[in-house]
Amino acid sequence: MYFLESAITLFLGAFLLTYLTIPKIIRLVEYKRLMDDPNHRSSHKGKTPTLGGAAFFYTLIIALFFIKSWSTFDEGMYIIPGLTILFIVGLKDDLVVLSPLSKLIAQTLAVSFVLANEGFIIHSLNGFLNINEIPYFLYLGIAGFMMITIINSYNLIDGIDGLASIVGIVILVIYTTIFYLSGEYYYSLIGLTLNASLMAFFGYNISGDRKIFMGDTGSLIVGFIISVLTLKFLALKPQDYTELPFLLENAPLIAISILIVPLFDTARVFAIRLSQKRGPFSPDRNHTHHVLIDHWGLSHKQASFLIGTFNLIFVMLFIVLGSTAKNIGMVIMLVTVVIVLGYVFFKYNYNFSTLKQKIILRKKVDSLKTKIEKPTLKKLKKKKSDFKN
Image (cartoon, rainbow, N blue to C red):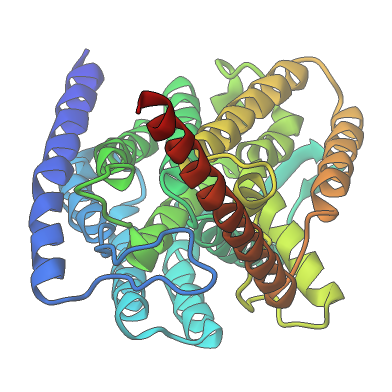
């Protein structure tokens, strides 16, 4: 009962704090003219306030203070430095733009604080692909790479209205439930706090007159928290799985299914860029959400809800399968799904030059239509006028 009261209070407090302070951030950003200017690869047309993720930062810091009694290994003191580093880096990137290398160094430093806490150590994969014991130094390398991958993957999907919010909400709802069932209430409360902030932010993100972006300030923070929750999920002990609806050995596959949208999109985009002999972080409009908008004609909201729904259904499917199926069979299924999705979306890759050609062609077609329609319209009006006379 005490946890339920704490959870409700924390959720309402985080939601209201974010909801009430974002308008102030919008006014400040507009006053200081710190808006995001659209360019040739942007999905929005007008100048839009950014830095919405600043609300996530102080909401999480305040929440970590109030829930510290729930922690076992004083994890908050290790999470806060990482959050602060990524907040500063994200803020600077939103204002002046940082190089990928600078952000990577900052992410590595932020992740190192978390890896230094013994509560996150993964001692075993519990039989996944017949892997049991994991040496400590191997854990550091794998866990560090995994966290940085998740942070960047989430950062890269923040390209259209509502997508990062919806995907983040889906991921955090699942992790909050998993940690509640496993008795890790501290992490359940962290997930609940960030989820409340994302829900409050979502209304502004898809708004027509009070729109704001979370920016790198927000996407790096959300990606960092998701990576922390993923690491803790994989570090759960066998006794924590008694109430979870899937086999212990399937935990790594469940984690991949939870993160399928950012991981698949990042892998696909990187593969296309490397095949075109470009850098993996070079900008383009090859993301899955861009394909849904540019080629399938969906709106931002439609594309975001479609991707979010797919993420939720995919996780539910794997949780059901993970309750009985062996991990070899699930690995085969996961690889098959990724290959099919990769094939479906790979034919829609293009670069700036082809995109520019399509835009020019579309403008020419629209111009021709206008030229044809105007004389026709004039003739109809003239006939109508003659008929009246």
